Image 1 (cartoon, rainbow over the protein chains, first blue to last red):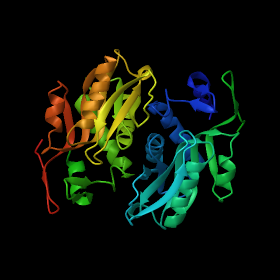
Image 2 (image 1 turned 90 degrees about the horizontal axis):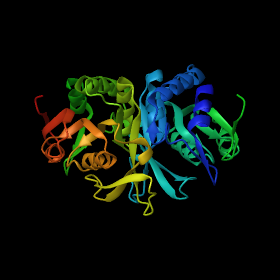
Image 3 (image 1 turned 60 degrees about the vertical axis):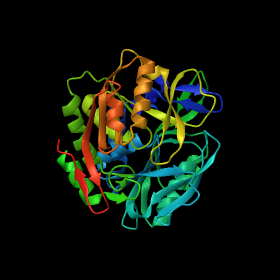
Length: 191
Length: 191
């Protein structure tokens, strides 16, 4: 998606350790107009898939998920990160390892809000090693929900995330795929 | 706001300790169509106030903030909760005590995204003791930003939050104000 790529080139910052900071428009300050264009594009990609629920994970996926959900006329469900040891029986639970923070945490969704009648679109801001996505896929599988696919804002194409998620049989779409990046240059994969 | 009150009566659940669960439509699963109506109402309340930025706090404020921001044509900034001890100099930081979880955490926003040229509308899902709002007000004050006011989805009118925030000279608007609640009955304040 040209608009997003241009915005990454203009306002993104690359830091050591393959960190791309896009906190001026995507995951701290949020450009809602840009999110709207992204929502439109996500609809174009998944419009004929019968999506009836968008699943994301707190916190930075929520904005994109809510704006995209307007195009699909469906609710959003956001998975919660928790360190609570005593989780109620009423949730599906999985473990996710954070690429950015190097910690592992439990991620839960209530059994009340996802089940075998759902066709789920998974939405998130970043795809790198794919840990968060694999967690969300696992939650859908536990619930018996069908997965239409994943829609990601920015994919780090030089990491293993896409392979790992596609190996689960899940479709992956990213609005901008970074082929390589240094502090001097960000290169995108042609789509 | 009638629509929100009716939804609370229909789908809200009251638990001991003055806990109102609205996770089927507001802070776990999100009814984006309802959020749209709420955004419209927030615009009605604050449309002539020159708002150029919406400030909220992760995670459950982000959805409402993003949808509301569409009506104001302005960006959202969401404050982040962190336990990191070494916070960069480039952030404003405050402490917030969580009513629900009984823990204290640091809340930060980057200095890059809020300053004295901003007129900020603070948006959140709940107002109870007001701790989160007071934290967000403090961040605005540190940044020298002007505060247009607060727009809250659900206020627990029997707790002290509104008084504490209004004493700081900040306007508070809530879309539904709960006067009293038991597991049998939720009563709203007439607005």
